[in-house]
Amino acid sequence: MVMHEQSRRLSEPLRWTRAGRIAVIAFAGLLLAGVVAVAIVALTQRPGLRGCIDYTFPSTLGAANVHVCGARAREQCTSPQSIPLPAATVADICRSAGLRYGP
Image (tube, rainbow, N blue to C red; front, side, top):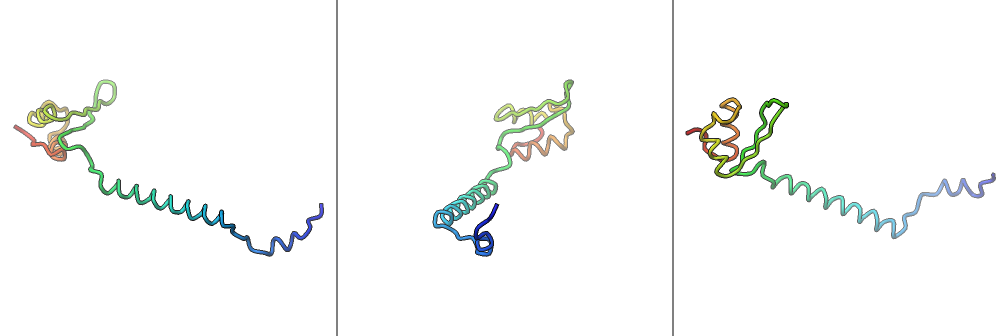
């Protein structure tokens, strides 16, 4: 099979069309907007809900996850013996939720 003018086509640089340039610029703009949006969400999002506690403890079936908010969370932090975790861990959980630890 004879390739007519193959060497000439290979020696010339590729030419961008107007539509190709617009597509690349639009893609770069969308990618930049996405990165900025993710950065803003990551910087402004709080690590947890205030007034809610969330902990995992060993259970008969492996592990149990507890998530409580409001009056129930305050009740568990004021009587920490109801939480089956070490006292230092319960204190950290309550303080990070903005709740008072202990009676």
